[in-house]
Length: 240
Length: 240
DNA sequence: CGCAACATTGAACGGTATCAAGTATGGTGG
DNA sequence: CCACCATACTTGATACCGTTCAATGTTGCG
Image (tube, rainbow over all chains, first blue to last red; front, side, top):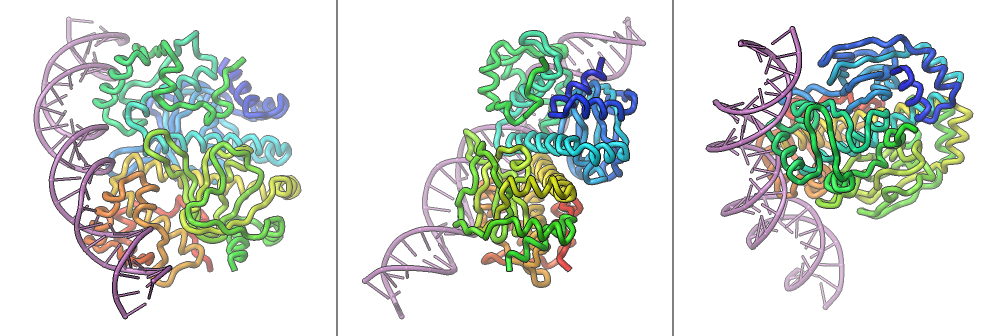
């Protein structure tokens, strides 16, 4: 089932059915990791391309004072740390936010594939460019948005990306992050996250409870978040 | 002279002499733009790859409330907005911080080059990955560093990158940013930038005056900035 | 049932923005 | 050579947003 997610998301990167199938064929069986597990550490050589099959993962950097900064979130179907693959060494740590399962393509096999099928390299290059637009959007949020808009934006982004994997019913979707996860991700205190969520609830923008998110009026939330899904590229598109 | 900067920096991306020369040959003559000029606007199709030959440029996104957020800085030799090239459309605006001059390679010619010489595409892909590490570092700064460390970090980054273009004598180098430029880039008020710079001066870390930066003890500044130049990749390496 | 994780609340502190002047510095026309 | 102006830089007072510390409530699970 989650192997299908891998194929679907590769196809959505613009790969032909053959190329996507070739990549899936090169991938190892799924491996499960518990919540908070660390997949790779900052500075390690990257010997494989990792694809997230289930759960939520994050890329982060640790900082002397003040713990760590989340740099990217990954939902099922996402390729994790393409940058580490192309540079040969990861500049970020990868951790599991929830329990996850991943599949990997060894470097040698992927390099051969890229060499034989230039479209594969091109698709990965583009995927990295989209990762970059997401990072830019986060920097805009961190630098120029109120915590209120940032929270709204995070909720929009996560729910949009999760919906694209097919994990939604109507205007409800699972929301796997706890308040402390969000605090960690946005660099806010858990206390403040709690208060901002209450504001969002009071404004009628969200209904978040027990891992389930309901957005009564998506247009209103989008407005408050200054959210424009175009930066998500292929990730913003629903699965047919 | 600045055409040499282009060749040098292409070589530093890992391109062979032939590939670098081919790219230089494909590039248009330099075009000059005044300070504050806008090279491309958010959302425009990207029909060429742009290389900065002189001056300082920035990529930024405009935000409803609160002006704009700088997402990248470019110094001579840098390729501007590779992401826009690969995605076909720029998601950021490019502006001149100081007067600049640029040279461009039309999309069609570059696509042909990438097709014929896979190493060219690979080098651009890697260059984009390094852009990504810089962006990550900025997000870390924005999210987890004090304005004091952020300022110190910006100064380290800019001076390191400028030095790599050969624009330094001993521990002095030109520093082309005004205090309001820095405020704009870091998302601080000019007032606060001024105060933080005074702290840095008082601590004996920098000597900044009239567009010239002196760093009495680089190790001290690096320490205060939590600056580790490894994230700059090839940009951090001095020209031999 | 009891524990652990998650969520909520209040009070006080601090960093940074904002507003509002004031002080160099350098270039330009008379 | 000087008066003038624009740009860059500096300074002080005040307000607000988000943190920190310290509890307290709530939920779900073994």
